[in-house]
Length: 546
Ligand SMILES: O=C([O-])CC(=O)C(=O)O
Ligand SMILES: [Mg+2]
Image 1 (cartoon, rainbow, N blue to C red):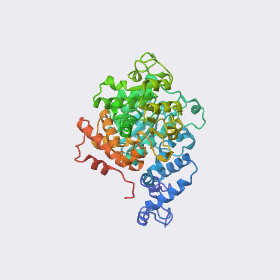
Image 2 (cartoon, rainbow, N blue to C red):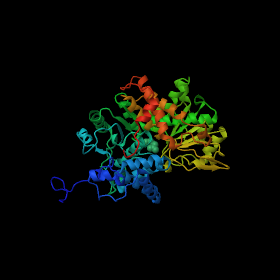
Image 3 (cartoon, helix red, strand yellow):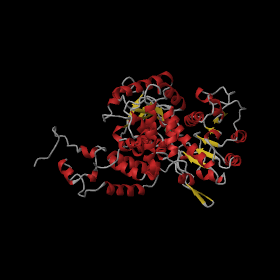
Image 4 (cartoon, helix red, strand yellow):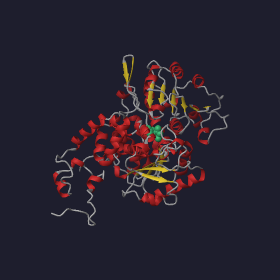
């Protein structure tokens, strides 16, 4: 019998084994192997997903460090996405820190070294300017319902990582699929390469991005404008999530685009909703309502300003005036207290400037302002010290302390420090995970306060409603829905958020709340579902070989 070759005698490509969306590896049945001419290309035994997953888990757990685990799972995803998501979904608690924060941060710093295969789109402001739509058309899948885009300007708390930032959109979209069941083939990660001001990257012979200074000013805005309008042309119904842009770009782009397309900024709005939900949970422990909180925000970037904006909106719903709500939110940045006498404040910070004496001493601010909560999103590791947290513990029976900066090396304090420095009385959450803490006889598992509790469900809700815009009210509704998912048992363990294993239930609740608001505000293009939770749950992609 003649060898089977392609029509031009080139080697036949066994497409089923090359496309990670359809590849099943040893999961192809005997019939499939015969009809698809895969016989002999695979070892004889036919395995179920569960059997394949056992091998993956065993290999994964043999890897020596988190980055090796990240690379192992990335390679698996490039080969067989069904198996990848089966493993991730079945072991979320174990997998999240590998495919997402904190390991994704390390992966981004090492991106040029660990890079193996393309995933997502790299769009260059230098090579592709004027042709961005053409580049978007190169995306090999017919649809892109959710796009997560970064320009690498501020990756987690790690600063400008240029094109290496691609790890973040990939990681965020993995969670869209794992946590909200949005099918992997409609998720598109994009890194906009606008250059980098990170000299060590530009001098790194392995760096894969453009070796150019970061574009700024009008040329930057024009490039973003070209990108956004190309997205609207090529994928007109997509949801666009801005991620890890630097502060100035994040706020400017949000103002520029939030009323014209279905987009949001995860670091501002997603983190804001997560933070508000965390405060509601904390209030159930401390016995104080939101309107009674006095919050010291340490760090005045996207996360904390988004958090404060959301808190102020929620306080006004509870009857406080705008001025009263703002007076309950005090900010410190790298130059000290954010006060009206400062002349160096950009518009998005000066909104929160208070009429107080300027100081750079956090301890003094704690003594004067007597906060019920201190929220770190400063990007500065170990920003909270014993002096500060013991002052919090003297002022409050149950001080609220959030150390939200990522990855772990940037956390303002560790969970262990927070418990030790407050005699075990702290109500704590952190952006990156910490192991459980035992203080005296009690063990606490505070868990993560991360926007992963919000953005997957928000995206799902927007899809369900066919939303044309994203509103602040949707994030308020998302915060309430998330807070309602927290059980009394969670709070007893010191957890302000639900356990990772329940992520899909959280996404259902958040999605239903968001879709509901979309319908109420007239942003929905689809008919309202009778039962939004059931609709959200039945929409979800389940990784199996159908
Ligand atoms: O990615 C995360 O873990 C949370 C986040 O958005 C950030 O830190 O920028
Ligand atoms: Mg982010």
